[in-house]
Image (cartoon, rainbow, N blue to C red; front, side, top):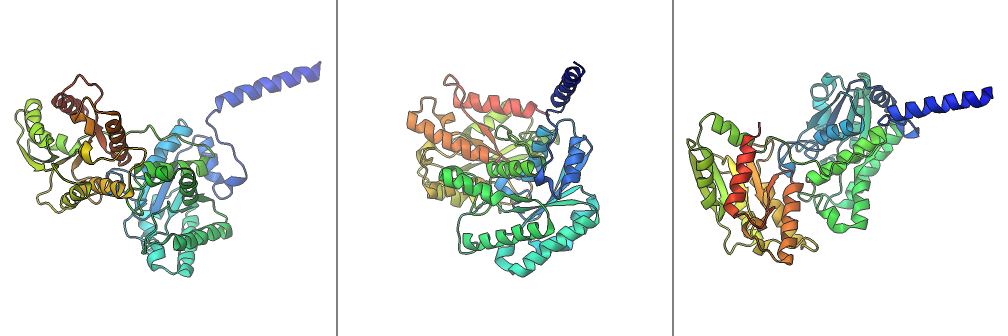
Length: 419
């Protein structure tokens, strides 16, 4: 009887403990190298992470210019480890390899006194850093991070489209170097490349639509990177698919309206004719200059060529409205590669190279067509996915009863009202 009573008491205690730690972490063999970070997360202590890398890590055009996978990693970790103070610092710089990383390691990484450093290089190293030097540089990065008691995770880069400058066969060799360093130094490996390849094998289109260009992921790809890193750190899978673009929606326009400064707009036709009157109703005192972006009889490639001039326009625009017509938007199930690439670059060129300097809004094609055919709705689905994958805000039709102007005005009114 005493044994039975003791068993029941233990079982009740265990059940209560398990329920209260639903979001706690399970330590296992894969915690080698980051056990201290996992223990801090499990005990709800503050954790600081620095993500070191190149343009894939940094905040650039391929994700809307406002965040990348480090920012999504912070969201992922807060999602799976509740009530924990987690800070993720983005230390990615375009064009950098492990050579430049070592030179800025003290300022950009070590001075932050991080608990964990994630390291993702290879796409630039494979183009100009010999493999023995790449290996040595990774080892030195690990050594320096450990000198301030920071743990390290090495990451393979995302999958890429095969090019002469970055052939997949060579990237695989550099991935092998990363894995070998991880094995020798006993640090965990986050194999983002393998995750991409798994998607590629099961659904080539899904894999392609993770990329903003030949080597950079779009935000859907960055979410994939963040999910993989979160899994490596915590052993748990985050759900980021429903995380929308950052707020506020129109930071540049709101700042200009607040300062009573003139606003320069570039808008694809026919929205160039609508945006001025709408703004006048919403902000009667504001001054607007609208430049039309012609779309009639323009192919995707021609629209891409026009988009390539946006970054060099002086003074720069404050708002760009991208509304690719239905006539040249491919359907979602089977878009040709040339169309995917051109559409991606229309969005890419519409953005500043680095941090967002002007607002960019995507408009779904059926905003202009309340009675779209089934095939046109498939094209609309493609446009929505491409815009959302770029981490851009989207104006879309939700009702066939509204006119195009009503949809535009309602969306802008709500967006400008948000703090």
